[in-house]
Amino acid sequence: MQDSGGAGRPAGPSAVHRPPTVDLLLMPIGILAVSTSGPLIAAAAAPALAIAMWRNVFAVGVIAPFAVARHRAELTGMTRREWRWSLAAGVLLAAHFATWVPSLDYTSVASATAIVCVQPVWVALIARRMGHDVPARAWWGIGLALAAVVVLTGVDFSLDPRALVGDLLALAGGVFAAFYTVAGGEVRRTVSTTAYTLVCYGICAVLLFVTCVAFRQQLSGYTAETWVQLLALTAGAQLLGHSLFNRILRTTSPTVVSLAILFEVPGAAVIAAIYLGQTPPLAAIPAAALLLVGLALVISSRPDDTEPSVPAE
Image (cartoon, rainbow, N blue to C red):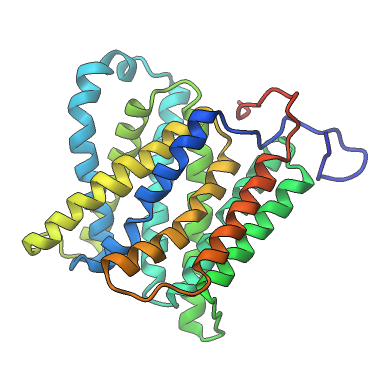
């Protein structure tokens, strides 16, 4: 196996592998679901941080009864390691929302989107730090996918001090998202999707509530239409989208999952064109094609005759 870490260094277990067929079938569903997030957030007449909080609160409200009824023994029997990783994932998800969302108030949507989408690079670097091998072809695939995002967003970085603050917040949001994905990959080795998402979304909701109170965000008094949009966001992007990717993390590496989520960018552009009447960018189709090629390069960077690895302890 090719080692991208330098000559003379033995290759560790691979950070990428070909996902099982069922994961490849579930990914497009998850991508379509999370692609509704941006348009719904843009349409909802509520503070963005409050939207992030409510989607997690509602998700916990849906998951909790089922988790208590069917997974009570698993929840009470979780080990310290499992609780530690689950709680860490919730903290990281809240940190992602708390940095990524405010970044949009300081810098352009194009710049913030392009920067936060560097997430697959951070995931791959974390994998390298944990002793996994990231083949050269995988790096090429990640680079091609990032180029597709830049083409689609028409990124316009600025040296304005306010814009730089936004760019740094978006950068932090991407890093937190990467660690959240890796943490999810760790805990999903032994914990069910239901138990994990209950703990993760629960701690995320609590932390976002504290953040909203601290920054005096409006948490109620919305129109009926806004509440319907919040419920739609919960059902689609949160319960179906995020939870599907958390399920996929059981058998697919965080590097591949983080790269697949980039398809949310062209997906959201198309949905915004239909739902909000916005003109889709001309680069949407070519960008999606480049993303597909990039993902194919990453998935095919590991030989067929090697067993897929799991995250290291």
